[in-house]
Image 1 (cartoon, rainbow, N blue to C red):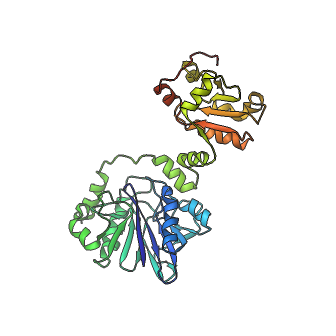
Image 2: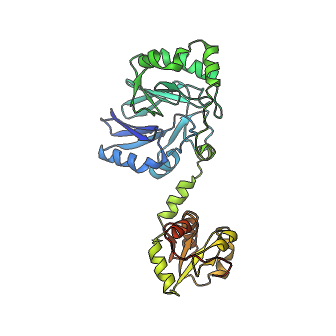
Image 3: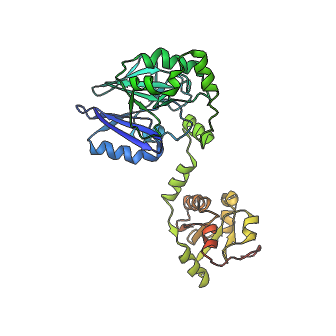
Length: 346
């Protein structure tokens, strides 16, 4: 078996390949690592056949749907997954065949209703059910400490003690553990009485994951994240440096239309000299009247450079093929000590 572990902060994903057939699977892919999975697969002569999420993630953005569409391969999750875009839904005891590899499904609800572990050869991919030195939390949507107790003590911990444990999170850099080691050393597993375990899980008082609402929305619906939208816009939009814009402002370059896409109050507090106000929220409605010549070179800017990147991408979609965005934004412009004009006039 060809094995690669890919870390994204504390999040862990895995590329497994069959050395005989060159078929491969990615477990818990993270959206920022898609090119890396493809690169690793190409390096080892593998072809990715399946993309599996062990559960609905609430703390990072899954790459299953985007990579599945890109490669034309199925997205795989447990039958209880709320995601509408899942192609193959699994039940407890099912197997996914990846070349000669057999990935056996163990339904382990508790962290989420759709949590599952995957056993293949001498390895157990535990998602967020069993972590190294911890367990998955149960205070997120569909979490259930009673169910987690059963999943751990009635199922996972009764497997071969020598099985290597590969979780979806590892904040200590341990790489992997074993069931035997977790039984002996994991503090949460020392609470072997159901009531004591459930009480402990309900008393953890953990902080909510960053971007939980966006992560759940994206991972359940397959919708895009803000980072995806910005990355896609940035891939089709050229940028102009602050110093270049300053030079053009100083020479009163009439060939460049500078658009401030912030709201009016921000514009009036201070803007680039000569910039017109056209808030991003009004862009599509006003573009024909305010920018009648689609051949003009147009530069957009906002406070931090994000909204203006989206605005420039929209302009290009509307036919303004010379639209560019300012590299930085008004904040960077001010910090560079470049001229700022207050008021409502350009």
